[in-house]
Image (cartoon, rainbow, N blue to C red; front, side, top):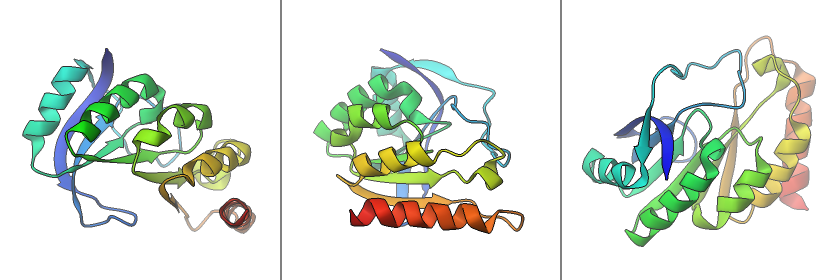
Length: 175
């Protein structure tokens, strides 16, 4: 089994609830969105076998938390599933960084993930359509694990988008 991997490296988590924690990052290539503010380099990747990714993680550093990031790692959900099983057997914790728009793919891997860091995509931030329904369904499945939501909010963002997102998050988390 192979996946398109942009890079594997150890670094400090720079955002969210685990900010400041050392993690090994596995950056998957490709995304199903094209957010206007995206700064992810999406030009280069290697097709890597599962065994090579496992070896690269082991040699990247001593951190025992692996952040599956991208792009969008759930585009590679079958690989993520196998990788997560292997890493869990080796005592790693799995941290999924995702755009929260692929709920069906999340269902396939959620039991193998420890933490879900979901980027809530506001249409006024991304320049894309609203993903309210996908985010709602994604959050419902995510609640089985530790989950937190983050979102890019800029000076030009629509206050109504932020209000809708907050209501959606509140509705799903309380019911």
